[in-house]
Length: 99
Image (tube, rainbow, N blue to C red; front, side):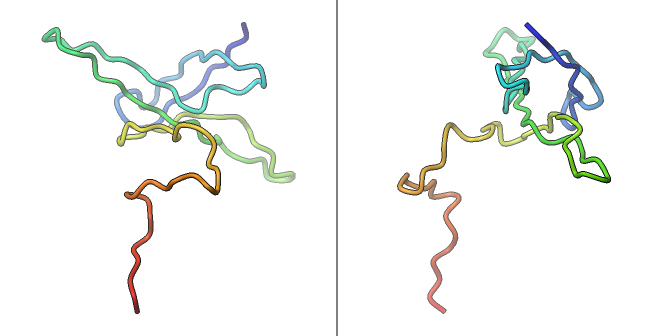
């Protein structure tokens, strides 16, 4: 399997670079979950990082790779495709105000 050194930004892993396994398309996974054991013996805390573009080249605007940004909400990138007929999450729905 192929891996790529990927930087992490934000959260407890800020500034670290870890080798991340690449998928069949040559990209790292959209979300990276890191379980951190509890010193008291309780359930582990899970840190969630989202994949974001590292930057773009000046001339052609091509992506220069990927990095992981800390997601404090812990939900990751979603859970699948966003179909137009799917039910929306009430927390993400805009306010319906009659103005």
